[in-house]
Length: 65
Image (cartoon, rainbow, N blue to C red):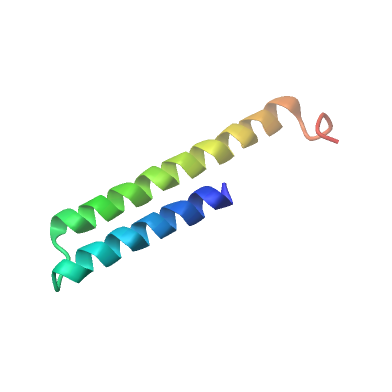
């Protein structure tokens, strides 16, 4: 999960650097794309954690030990 977040952060930083090199200010479309990528990463992370929590509650903590 951590490597996914690092990859997404690096990707967003790369996109930002490319876009900022050609123009002085970012447009609403560029901000929208960055927000969309952040939302997708958050959904993936929340889904992964939610699945693990669901398994924990269904199987119980004693089943894990």
